[in-house]
Amino acid sequence: METNIILKYNRKRRKKSIHQEIIIKPISYKANSRNTIFQYVFNAKTPITKLDLVTDLQLSLPTVLNNMNSLISEGLLMQVGADESVVGVGRKPQLITVNPKAKFTIGVSIQASQIHIVAVDLKTNIVAKQVRNIVFGNTSEYFTQILMFVYRFIQLSGIEFTNVLGIGIAIPGVVDQENMTIISSRELEIENEHIEKSFKKALFPVWLENDAVASGRYIQEQYSNSGNLLFLSIGQHIKSALFINGEPYEGNNGRGIDLAHVCLVPGGKPCYCGQKGCIEQYLSLTNISSDFNMDLEDFLTEMAKGKEVYKNAFIEYEKWFSLAITNFYQVYNCNIALGGENIPLLTPFATDFFADAQDISGSGMHLYFDNKPVESSAIGSTLHFLKEFIGSV
Image (cartoon, rainbow, N blue to C red; front, side):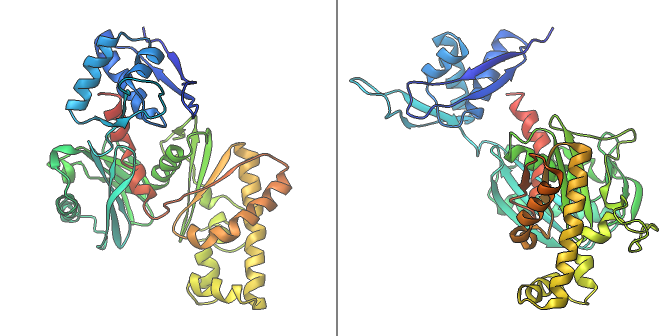
């Protein structure tokens, strides 16, 4: 029977007090000691010493030394100097931390006319990235070409193939990872496409993830205190994902939530889905700028100059934005994260939008911003492999 042991990481003798909570699920004493030590070091905010491991994990010194030396020899942990905070005579204890470059994962975000490739280390730091212009094609040749791009990318990044844990692929649509199927994608214009054969001979395991879910996972990783979270991607299209206790809500049919085509304005603007007044027609900045036959950047530039017609259109956008965010919070009662390709352009204004929404709802909701809106879905698609590896060491 599995039991949960909650360990408090609190080193009072250090100048900086650290509080870290981890949950350990024992398998066997020997295997668990090794993984417990690795996860403890991995989760620590600063490098730690072997005495920290002995004291905080309540393990014997020989057990700590044997496992620590083994993990160091395998390149998973590394020594980073002496603990200068310890005063007195004698040899200062060595500080230990995880080696983030021990393993890597590759993330690929597929879009209609290009792909974004990233290589991330164990701490989800981007070590290399690349954009390839390639028009999506529903053929085995297309996916084979994607793999070839990835292999070449790994070589150019100087990463050993043996250190790659897997390839995560973010898809703008509903996916079935178990059956390696793209159930539907309006952007890619495909339905019920089984792509397992295309990746059957891949050199690494492949994991499919909806792009909004992948971005949400990345934000959950960056803001560990985000708890329940609603992720909203604002780009050419509006995408959404709901996380409950850190896991994506999939719904009864695995499709999760789709806020883009929830009605915001009854009888409002016609939408390509056949309805009127959909959220996408009011929250997609691309739709607003297209009303003036100009790019979004040009629209925001003209609006910033104070031209009345553009300013009024933006004020109208702010009104619908505030109403939508307020409705989302009242329905889901959780923190909200904003991402997507237009977020860098919207960020200077979004805080004001959110303040308006907060005033309306009278709530204590918190707003997060995706700090890597271009790469977050590619990074998030790799987290499956990272967590799998960390739990298996």
